Image 1 (cartoon, rainbow, N blue to C red):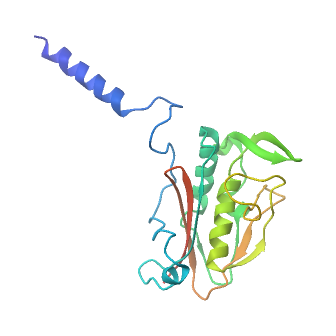
Image 2 (image 1 turned 120 degrees about the horizontal axis):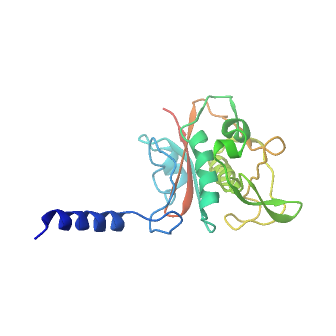
Image 3 (image 1 turned 60 degrees about the vertical axis):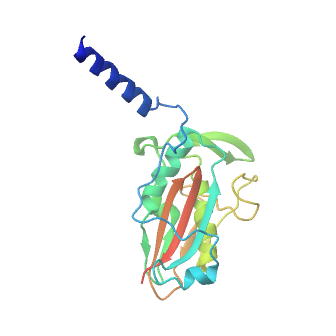
Length: 204
């Protein structure tokens, strides 16, 4: 019996079962921003309980469902997440989504995905990151921080109800807020179970 051949066949079967082809759908999310700590406790906790939690200092949380989980869109959201995840804003400091994330360009890895432009759906580099800015807006609002700039989409979006969105477009539309607390705050975000999740923490 050729044991070497059998071993090679077993190895090949294992590799095929543990790897997904590019573009194939799996039960796990294809992308995830690196996390320093999980956004927890779960948002079912009351705001009062979150604020009084000595372990996490969580003061705001929001999550939105990824109805469009196409690879280009998830890539764009993940790239933007990597810029804001772990970001600390000092007391009195203003956070700018556009200044933190930077330009959305092909050279930086961003892909073409759907955006709203002149009341139409079009494909543009960086499409999809408004879901992240909108989720961040809702978390910041729950935290009670001072919002200084925010714009609604021209058309309704499927991941938040009308009035809960915050569209961004580099050089034109930004989402900004000021840390109006007397302690620093930190943004933690990730993608898990086809949801964009953002937590705002008071750094104690």
